[in-house]
Image (cartoon, rainbow, N blue to C red; front, side, top):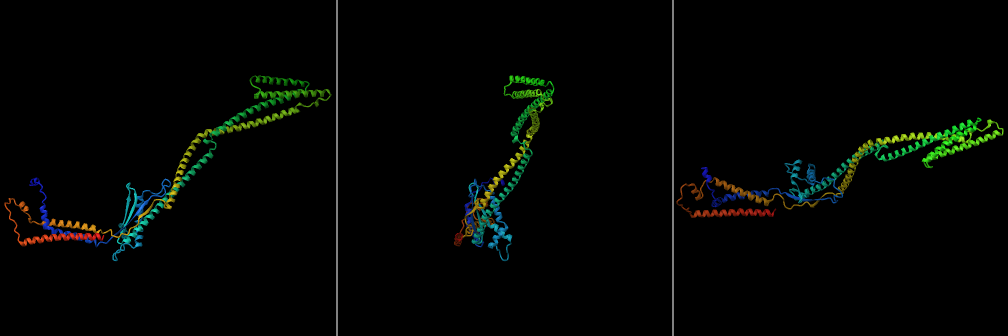
Length: 532
């Protein structure tokens, strides 16, 4: 049976059947249609009217270009609007507006609590963002619905003022907080930099003369000290040679004095002559190798000249002594050669040479100590250079951080001044809060259409239920479908005049009812349109 049912072809739509249903059930359809429409449309006139006031606020960019003064506040406008909205829609802020304008008074028997009022007001407030093609927020709209158009406009004005003032306050506060934070970081960086500078100063003071920057100076000083040391050493050697020479001369004078006090006194001249011969031989040898300006040649010539002068003075002294002896003077009155001016001069020169030698030796000792000190500085310089490099690296990092924070602090202070002068991003009222002339709710024309849809659904549902419950046969097709035998002939329906009049009245009543319902719906729509 099921297989036969599946093999049956789908029957075509029988339009005549639906027409017959409409003919028979039009009254049952029109009554629910009219009642459903009337119920929905009529309720719109009993609902409380709600008026919508809105304002459009434009988000203006900072008047100062960003390449001159960079803002130091959050650039995410959507996040800032959410934060501002949460602050404005807070319980405290909304209660101030509610108390100021005496909103949501409620009924005398059922007064509303503060929380109920706040919840109702939050539902009546709407904030819509306006974006451009790049999805950037360029403006936003504030809406508020109230039973009175004046109240709606006043509350919208209050909310608009709160948004504008709060935005300026938030931006200024954020800017000041940013500046204070950067200043605190800058102060810490300044302390760190001062600490690094103090460490470098202490290190330089503790390693004076061992710093890398003093290497060239130390080398120059060491070279100069070594040259001075060599000069002093050469001068000391020369002074020692002179001391030996003057000591020799004194010894010769003492020897001559001893010879002159004996009968063979004049025999002291050979010793002086022998000394002269030696020095002249040395001069001849030096002259063969060096020029006359060589220091040793000049010194030897000076010694020869002094020795010749001593010889001449000695011979003159002997002659005077001999003359005095010929004149009968006693021998013990002969003038002592050791007390002569020449002898005193030699003794003074020898004393000077000895003092010079002592001074030279002291200077050499001092130079040796200083040379050792500078050599020690140069030896310790690599370690000092490494330690100073570590300290300098930390100082450079602190200084770089300080300079960067200093630039940010200056830029942040300028941005804060710009915000305080209201030269930053601002909210400007593009459309002031509107005074609504017609209620935004209920939309009676829209509810009229909704009532028509509801009535249609109710009428169709009622007709469907009645057809489902009706077990009568209303057409020959249903009879043929019910009977298994073929229909040979049909007996036509015999209608009396009374039956025809009854059918005619039904048709007239049906069309009249349809026309009445249609006229009522059109009239209600027109009335709603005119009063909306």
